[in-house]
Amino acid sequence: MPLTNPPPDAIAGLTLAEIARLAADGRLPPVETWNPAHCGDSAMRILADGTWLHEGSPIGRIAMVRLFSTVLRREADGGHVLVTPVEKLSIAVDDAPFVAVEMSSEGSGEARRLAFRTNVGDLVVAGPAHPLTLADRGHGEHPYLRVRGGLDALVARPVYYELAGLAIDEPSGPDGAIGLWSDGMFFALGQTPA
Image (cartoon, rainbow, N blue to C red; front, side):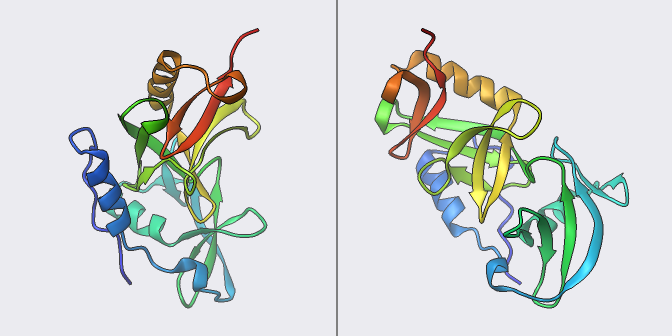
């Protein structure tokens, strides 16, 4: 099964072009094409802070977490499964399966590009295929980034503060919204006070 090459632990020293190339070079298993019978429960859970548990204990090996993350899929009913060509197991996800833990920005205004690294090493450039949204999933409004195939990353609080700092310095967007452009798309992070 093809896996992503382990990405760097930091994106701070990379250009957006290098980040986009690394993201494009990532090879993930074609989980969307696998349709085995459901076999049961994996006894795994992903906490809201991105910690992966098995039978209630944290999985301490990041390589194992990264491996499991490559076979994670969101089902049409909103549930999550770990899937291979021969089995499918349910996995509990408290909020989003990933956390965006680092961000890099290049450019400004409509020419800006924002890249993110998740807790499992995915590199994502926010844009039309990877929107940045605000949503309330039962615990207040938080920012989320689409990573792949219906799987989102909760934007970690320090990263959100970075986004907010950048947005404050930008002119307001369409309809007076406070937000940022990335890869040709505007992402609202709030409304201009009346």
